[in-house]
Image 1: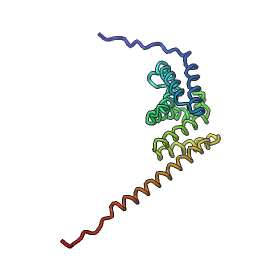
Image 2: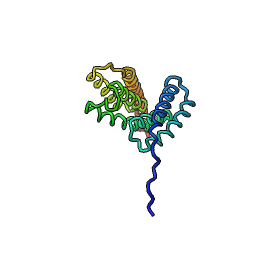
Image 3: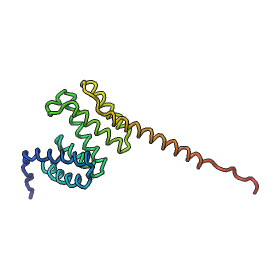
Image 4: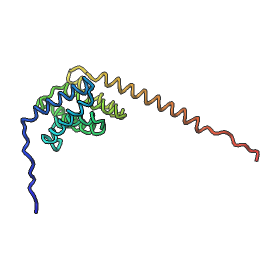
Length: 186
């Protein structure tokens, strides 16, 4: 016998509480570097978000989940949520309707910077460069300051480091490949 889908009604008054937890989480994780406390707050926030946005359809739901995944060390998941968030904002930005989301242009640029930083940390440097370039271009077009300079420098450092590692591996590989001549005296 089919059952009716009995989803619990969403208590919209809980969103401010979720935002408050999110702000506490940002402070604990980024400013105070308190990983244990951050994980505790993240768990409480995740439980609340799972009730408020079970299908990850809202901007805050995706933003909060991205941070929680980052705290858990799951960069792939953090990137996935951040990509969904940026894609949703992209649609509004292209239509010049960011104000409909109560977002300022610098909020959008910040999301691109965060995505670029996650890509960089995950070793996806080409995608990091694309995201930070998109942020810089958007800032120039919107007439706002570009705040992603530190992220761009980090990407450049990672690019140099990976190039050095690759070139040193290539040198070692050449030495291994070098063969001694075989003696013809049998």
